[in-house]
Length: 97
Image (cartoon, rainbow, N blue to C red):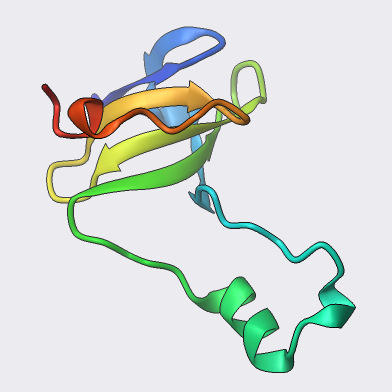
């Protein structure tokens, strides 16, 4: 079973977590000020990269907190987890060094 390290509770089984989308997607301050195409891009367009990807997760069956994670989409390995509002770990952490 895959273990995911919650930054609030520590390592827990993957069954306790729920995927919540790509991390660091910034919403417009006032959605009325953006065009329809910009709003569509915000709602539906995601990077879907192969390799290390920043994602938002929720510890649904634990502390219920949202947090960010760097996960390698080719191996399903979680490189790092960090609280929302914290800076994304640097490239050395992403590469697993």
